[in-house]
Amino acid sequence: MELENIYELADNKEWQSIIEKIERLPRIDITFDLRCQLARAYNNISDFDEAIKILFSVSEEGENNAYWNYVTGYSYFHLEDYKLALKHFNSSYSLGNKDVKKWIGWCEQYISNNEIEIKQIANRYKKFGFNISCITNQDNQYNTNSRSYFKTPSHPWINLFTSKQNKFNYEDYDWTNCVGIGTFTNWNNLVVIDIDGCSDPSFLRKLLMELRLPQNYEWVVESGSKNGYHIYYSGYKIDECEDDDVVSAFPPKPEFEKYLDKIEFLWETHTVLPPSVHGSGNKYSFINGSFPTKPPLKIDTNTVYNFIETFLDFKEIEVGT
Image (tube, rainbow, N blue to C red; front, side, top):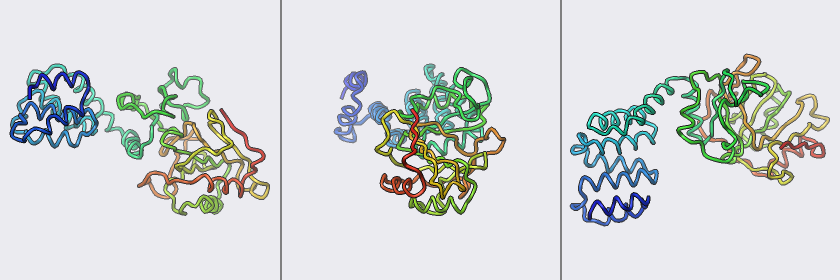
């Protein structure tokens, strides 16, 4: 098989065709250059582990090859192993591939970012599929009109309710001046129940029971105000909501007014995550452990309706857009 044919397919981004053509060949006919192109194709369908496997099947020949090191660095970069990526990009550069200089710069920046403790925590949330915001105390065009720096992202964020976060944008946030992190409900069906004016753990346990969540549920956060809780779960808007409704607020039924002020369902809003600093100076914190070990649990809509009917005044629902 001529490489020119593979390059033509690559120019047209026909990655699956490249994989099929090369993998149909007898093993003995798959040359070093073809293996590099096969790995490149797997990279471009985001199967980076398979790309690494192919590349290391010819590592002895590849170690001193600029292109092999570039493709290997690319795989490691997208697996977020920036130190190994940097090693291979540097090798590619020293072997004559000067086009990798931007990748070297990105690796160095991301390695530096990941030495910051709150960025390390942000990365852990990302593994649960969250889109993550970076909150700073630096005045800029994105937070200057907000009521509180401590609750507002310091970067563009409107698309993060509905689109997966771009890796490069995420890494380019101002992590050096970061004082908090947040996330975006609606993305990946994330919902937050915001319980205002509540500081009674025993009443919180009743709420969890009605939601059919375990008493030691990991995704319960105490607000930095020390007068409220956030419960994270996976679910959907109730039928009474319009497409553009971002929050539903309910007052409690009279018999529960002594326990809380109101409950809001945050359908499509930015919400602050532990261990961010609250305006009071306290930190948001998980009440059942230092950090969750699993993603938020799913709650079905019927359970949500039962919860509302039990504790809240449905007739006084308020929606926000």
